[in-house]
Image 1 (cartoon, rainbow, N blue to C red):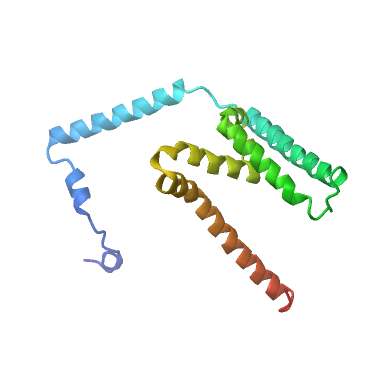
Image 2: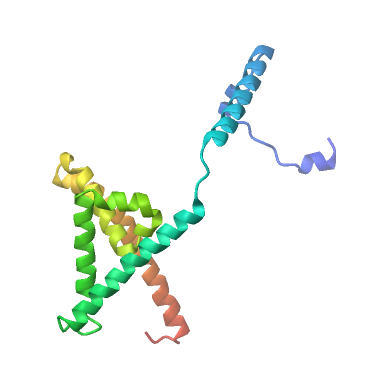
Length: 183
């Protein structure tokens, strides 16, 4: 054994790899044929799939997401100008109305149709999150209020809340150190 070979790491072979290695010449031929069939199928599937209109999808997502945001701003201005809310407090009823509209559209099955058309444009944080929460609750309502609706609805919400809390913590730490210890 040369010094170069001695310095090479030893590759561990798992029992699964040993099982998958062909034993006979016939098995080797069958494995090669299977790989060729898989490659032919992948090529055929790629050929038959229609090209995705990525640019058009981006435009639709931009327009619909923008319209949702413009509608949210319209609601905010309405709460400020017609209902006398202070500028800082007008966001709360705006968010509540957007959530109610999103849940209502989800319950009627319209939000999914809009999402099929607009794609990621409907994933605006407030309405998209309300849709995902309410659709999980509607989908699992037959399993009961606690184990069906509650558990499945909060599978998504839990990760979003954890991400929000952790990010807020790190943003506060960064701000604390950048501001010299003053929050």
